[in-house]
Length: 276
Length: 276
Image 1 (tube, rainbow over the protein chains, first blue to last red):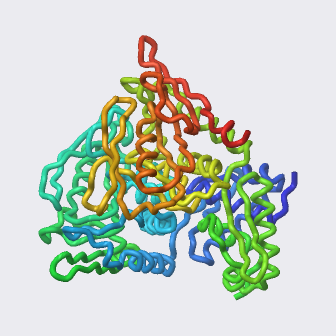
Image 2 (cartoon, chains in turn red, brown):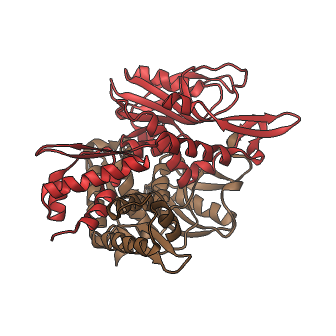
Image 3 (tube, one colour):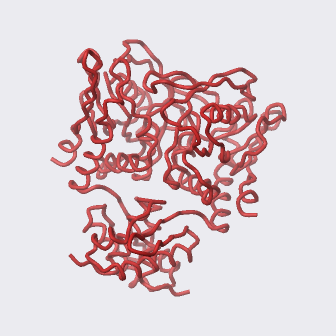
């Protein structure tokens, strides 16, 4: 079967998007479409040029007999700003206020369109870093970690609050939860993280930073390396004190649960951290 | 700016894949590329033909002034069989056996390539059903639910094992956990599910079916409708009895934790349920 260029471009784009950050060989495409490698190379130039033009990512082409292409999706500065503005608008809603200054975000964390934007934003931050694994803590961090993992094509691991039979042997650490000022315990299955692994930590919401701090301790316990920490939203620290000082936040939320009840969302430090 | 057909095809495929099961108008593409609607219509025919040829999904084109296109990704029978075989091979590994006949699956549930296949398989099952929301229970069901949600472009909701401040008001039910024969409690935030919603329930692993049964009770409590239940893996029921009888499983796992310790994975009832 010989496939025409127009059909090759569509299928190639689909295939590369389903296999992000993976080297797909010229040979594979050449056999798939019954086309010469020189034609495939020309196709890949078109794909590369298109992604670049629209600020949607980059296609790296590796020349030579064992060559191929790697697609990396990310946001240009302009597209990232638009995504951040979308998130701010979605959270800026007084009905999200919960008792104690908490913010209701569960609906957003279950929306595919929001998760694509969040995942792609965070993947953009770490696009040129050497990352082996994404880490989060159950429960609401999981959708964030998965979205990032899908764009980066790296596995994610879930830290749990208590032992579960189905995890096998685990390593645990104690940590101080900033928002409730209590000693808690978190643990991770021994099999899921290797010594020396480069880890990006993500979560849905940061108040005091205790949970993020706990994950950092766990990373040290596994002799792994922390690359960076990013959360969807940063709230007000309960006592004004943060246990971590190097966390990136997509948005910042002021939740007033006093006499006036209101939510004010605005962009976090993401844009200045990533693009300046 | 006028964009050439080859670049339009690449960007259009990317855009449609980033907005699955969403009507994208001819007008939008026409303005984006500075091209006549008649040219865009021809482009869409090429995209449609390509997805059909490779068994990767379908593009529905809606004619007329307010028309456009909707991309739905799914597996052809042949591609689905290949994905199921991949899953069986990944699970068929005696080192996955945990005490008590449990199976270690946490690594697979954190792998983007596996999650894409699982999500797309389950989305294929419900492709022609009217579905409003995907439901799962924390923790390991979440990645499954999210993968399905991304392909179906529907939100997912997470049932939790205990009350959390950040969920707001909740509705709870008691259920019998088949595998540990104990009464447990699960709950769902009141805001996340509407009366009359059509719900697909997914989870990572089924033994007795008690958890799935609990989610079915919760759906009734919200006056919503159960469309179907699908799990990644079905194990052996502890006492040979199942609490649900209409669940689809991608794979079936026999875990022998007696004198001989072994794991045997094989295809579940998915292929016969979906394609026969």
